[in-house]
Image (cartoon, rainbow, N blue to C red; front, side):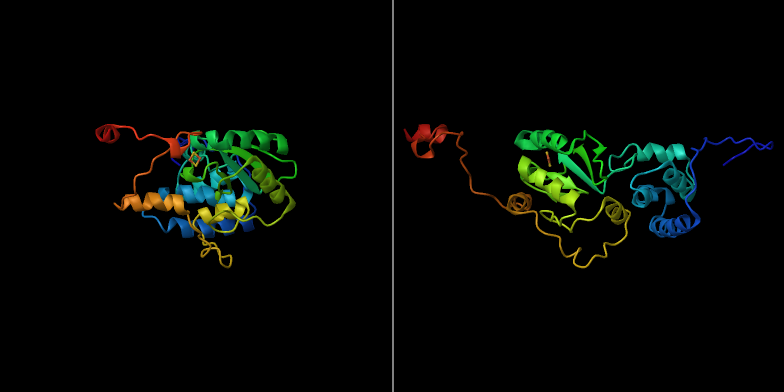
Length: 258
Ligand code: FES
């Protein structure tokens, strides 16, 4: 930071923050150096470094922001601007399991709004709040491009597809009881802190985790085939309640045939 000859700082003020204990700082510095070395410009490492400090404390603290700023030669104001922009960084202590209910349009109309309301009642918490046992943080999330499996719930960013009010309640009960739960696809679930470390760019070393990629399922694969230029046979969609057997053809082709 630049200072005048009298020692007065000309740089941005830094947030007051307690230092990490020496052993924690040494460990995080070694991890941070490994991450920074992956980028031609060290500033590009800010996003993974924020995940790294989040993996230490479960959210991005002032100490974590100060650490990132020191490692990258940034001000804490610059770090805070990034940390507060992205919703994947938490700014207050959170639960072991972040349960995100997609309430964007498609999931909302398919039951996401009802699931979110039911989980608020069931858990006794509001949006962004954590259960007293520290296990579950409930929140609205935006579309995660899994609309063909609506309504979608994500736990620590792993997919739980085609949820209902009952299945979502069972899911949070199992999480709170420590029961094993299996995402619909992707790697087995781990805690929010462990997820943050993986997002920082460190390998998931649990046995079988990488192989457990799963599949996006048949609906998404139709989209993939279409994207590759393959065509689907035309399909008539019947309005609800109408009996397809009794439907009269309509449109120009039908009129030509009449
Ligand atoms: S609207 Fe929920 S995943 Fe797209």
